[in-house]
Image (cartoon, rainbow, N blue to C red; front, top):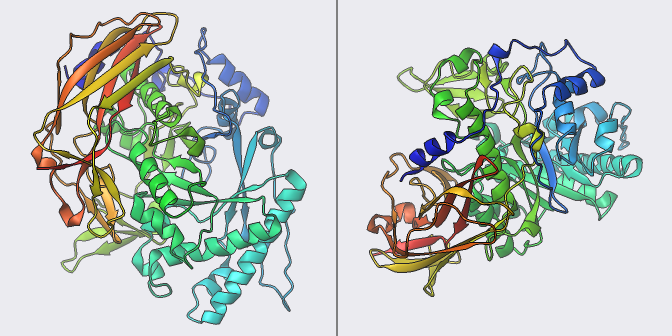
Length: 590
């Protein structure tokens, strides 16, 4: 039985969940106060509140709540901020951001070597001070006089830039240390690995020097303020080992304490755990095994349901959400949270997780100012090939690409109404179980990248039968019903890096036509498992596993790898759930 059929079956057992959207004909109060917003959120909570999970000790948890208030002239606009804050306040989130910009706090260059800082405009809200963690985001990119030094062709100006930026970072860190006790800082901007070459090439030899030059200065500054300060950097769109290594190439040193990751991955990944695994491998290889990872993108709703993805009404406005669509958002959050909080012995540990804020709270209108700022780029024949936007290049042949679009990514809709009850049970409770998968063979390791022989992976032989054992134990006090077990690869789109694209030696490679066949074939050789697993019961399954010879391919010298995964879809407490167990991620040789 394929996954689509399983999910269709599971939808048939869903409890009725009220849809949100236009048909509800409800709108929040105009510019509501904090008290009015809290009342609005409470008014729309379900009669029976869902059970919440707990945030693991030491883990920072946030949600992305994009946009300004209705009517604001921002790129992203959502529902009223007070309503968003009221939703966040009733979740288990424990972290808040505070932004400080160089341009606003040091408005002019030092005179006679003397800096003049003005932090009177810095605001840390009472609700932020109630959080367990506060991250101070340092925006170094909006200082006009600083950028003139950064983009100067004179090396002396660059040295002065480093000194001034480092001094500013030190002053900010001292201020936040002393006034608010804040020791966590973040810098570097967003997805700077995607910046257009024309932006940095006249001034820097490559993108990572362009990125790391300010990061180095800020790191030195915050550490000069106190060695206990920690700096978060990264935020690259791609997080394979080649990208992570770029964090160490400036002076051959490490200038960060927490690595921020965008964990985009293949369909149904929700968080691409292979990127976290690869990032951890490279950090350890660079002697930075103590550096934890913060997941900041890899949106919890993506991929969207086909009914939304293919519905053109979403380009111009919302419509009511259907029950299957609402369940999709719930399952996406459950899968993302399960991925983050599930130990994978030998490959992923919670002690390496600094936190996550990839969950999207609210639908929002996105890209509202892009059309005005984007500059069209044409090929030699005059055909549109993309846009240059804020120093980034967006490749597209769609002339309407930069028009505003409603992004239906959130746990609440554009009007502030909840999609089902997931936002009231965040982080979600995950039914207790033990799920393991074992491949019964001692695998030899070999390199998978001809340019990096130190990058190794286990190796299997194609068309050879291997035996695997899968064990599942229900650790809840009530049965798990409608159980459907399977074993195959995570995605038919698996390719180097674990996703449909890879960044190798500075070049982006994509899988244009992924193979739709199952590349890992698993045959159940033990008796069929029960469809109901009782409390305390353990189900043991034996499989014969083979790997498709087509996996023995090394485009651009990089050997494909594939991870067999045991999946279980089941119903517990009247609602559907999914969990999985990993086998080794291997490369295949004929």
